[in-house]
Length: 201
Length: 201
Image (cartoon, rainbow over all chains, first blue to last red; front, side, top):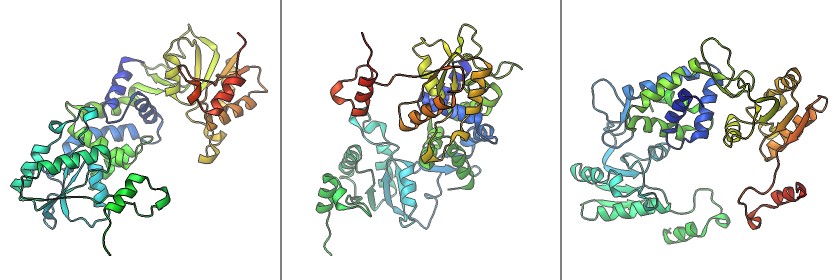
């Protein structure tokens, strides 16, 4: 492998989840793809920081329009309930909550989860920033919408504890049988949670 | 999502295996990564077609040096046995065979496998080019090194049949227990192949 190719592969390898094999696949695809994919994608990547930045309030992708500060379309939408804050692990989780269009609050993206096994402690996440925002913006309710995994649950528990001293309602999204889920094939942890979280009709 | 962001995401989505979520992750990572990743990667992608092309003989990534035609470092290495041809599905498989450094023949990259279920027939692969190369370069032996999967085996069988009329030895890489593999945990198909392929000591 030539130094120049090695450098291109290393740059692709800095994208999350991209190893040597995926980098090779990308490079080869860019060389064989129809149209002008390499120049179009190259230009788009080059210009990304000119047009976008992480939202200074929530971490979502914000489009930079002129000299205004980096705030995303959700944080600047005054029809939203700015006192209702949904805490998610990733921007893609935020997108998932936005799809049904029913949630009208705002978000906070952690950009990760606590994971003792991977050495990700509280200091690696913007928890101080989250707590400060809850206070300074007088948030009414925080919805902990981290995933129902070991790390997601641990992060939710940790955040709830951190927020105990604050004057804010803290809730956790429901865990149970997914829509269309057949009882027979659901794992026992989920079934246990579905029973625990039952509601009187 | 703004039109400009949608366009950037769509361009990433044209890379193999990249969906909406991965594209989002890449964009966000490029906006938050330390250093100048976006401009470095953008420039590298932009310049890829200037410096590289698929090798005209084997399909490997070839570095373009001046006005010479696109042939990769393996195909232009005169110390290699140009009459021994190893047929692989992907460039990454070629790299895997190159790692130990013991194979001294050349390669042919199919860039895929026959897959009736995915609608990939013989016409979608450069099989005519492979057969022509075997004849015109008087290949002595073709090693079919497609993976030991359903599609990989089917492709190897198909290629063997296509090569029957040609004056060439066709071999298939061995299938059996991997190095370090414990008998107890090996699937029965692999065990069957290991027995079938046994060698007298």
